[in-house]
Length: 127
Image 1 (cartoon, rainbow, N blue to C red):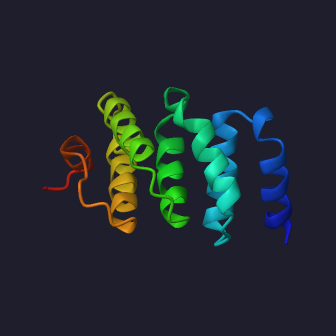
Image 2 (image 1 turned 180 degrees about the vertical axis):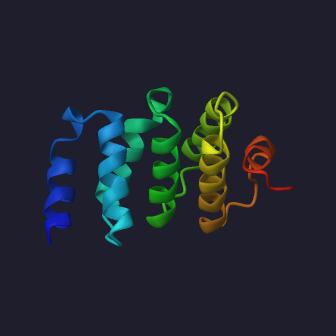
């Protein structure tokens, strides 16, 4: 139960973690199939005002983790979508599209019907 210990420690020292590290920890916990509502809520609260500090990979990880926890904070999810569209516009290759697709899938998993058109376009999905 190393992930339980990791989650507990991360919650306890959230104020010491950067937004990037908080997202990476939440992503690892989620990817392993574990759920920690407290860690998810604290991470979401921490990064809500720091989305500009996150790059495409972290934004996609955050969206997937929020969806994995059933965390439906629309303002945060729209902020993630806007930032992914903004960053993705300047990327070569498929990094922007892949991140946008992850965020679209997160909106879908959370049953959020109003996916921003700009995000759908960045993901190559017709709305």
